[in-house]
Image 1 (cartoon, one colour):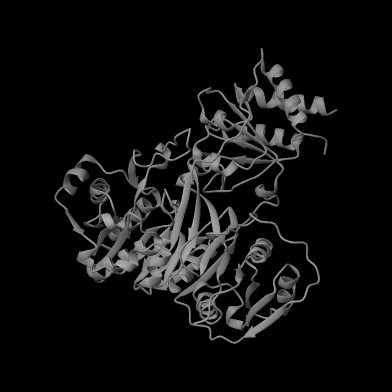
Image 2 (spheres, rainbow over the protein chains, first blue to last red; image 1 turned 90 degrees about the vertical axis):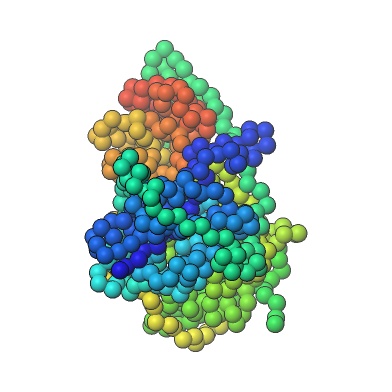
Length: 263
Length: 321
């Protein structure tokens, strides 16, 4: 049986994130969490591959310093067979170097696999480093920016969207694939799927369960500050009796700004 | 073990490598160290001379038929060996679809930190290199420093300026490094059709969003854009949901810096705003007066874009006469 492991991040829902207007500090603690968008595409793709191959299983893997039960249950409802979480408060300040290390140790403990699927980047940090780092630590062939994936026998063919070209890349399995949102439209689990998922297994490990060495969790980078950008816009409302009047005033303002002129 | 030194620059995109040299020059002058370009390929001598003209003190070259085209596994093996031998302090890598995973993998091999997609780089006396990058979906700008060396950074195209090329002296160091067999194989490449005008280079962008009802209505945008000598842009839903366009302006699409950005029927979610933050003047036209786009606009018009856009085109034509 082929096994596909999908790495899922519990991310801050950036669409609901607010900043303190006085200090520009983000109010991260109070913001809701959700499954990172591209990771959801990765999970959807894994389930589609499983459905096509028949003889396959999908496991999800999450590294977190906080409770992530909700997204693990969601992943099981969407169609994963088993969910793994490595949950340890000591992960609070790890960076991508540490996260990739924890993922790699967890994957070694899970055992054999054919594919690892990751989202191209996370919703909140959007560094896009973890998938590449993980592939490197496991010594796997890896393909990023994948918008179409085909499993053929013992290999995968992946279509990658580059800046100025579309590339098709082949690799032998086991391999690591990073997907973009173009690859599919993730399904929304039905009530039936949600109920069925309650019987599925969630396995939780700590850093000690994986024998993670403390120095592997030391961050390589130091975040000095994270502040909402300053918006220094004029916020002038242009009003008038009708569209012509508004347009006349706006045109005048733009010409005075020096951003509209004769070419 | 000798200490790490020097700033290295690498990008498989020739122009981006020159932009990195421009910023690299500023960093090495502050750190009082040397600037090196890393150049892999086949018959690369002319390119090595060009890199020196654009600011490199040294160019490390590996000239090999197997490196003619960028291939992550092959290039990575060579750069890794080079970095082990010559120990750079900072490595600036072009942030492209290929460059990002390349940098992440190099950092992993070297046990190093990596800060991707930097929009700003500076040198702080206490902390050394300080990177700025947008994060949390455009909600914030993070300032990040490193705790270890080498310090690996990626930088998107058109973030920094190239220097004026001039005749300078520089050293080309030719190396022979074995190229490893790649773990992946490119079996097909299809060039993408791209428009002649790069939206990043446009002075004026007239951009449409969900407030447009039909695809044909984008003519309202192009009509106004042609009077302004600008180009048409769009928000993500018009590309992803409606498939009217292939690309979009925003954090996940094109980040633009025109003199004038006119957002028509665009609500202004943070991801879109993050892509237009560097516009000089932003105009918002939206029928919903609560739309968040008004919070980041210099000039706001609450109204029907189907009436405002044609009227604005006429008004500009008239006033410019």
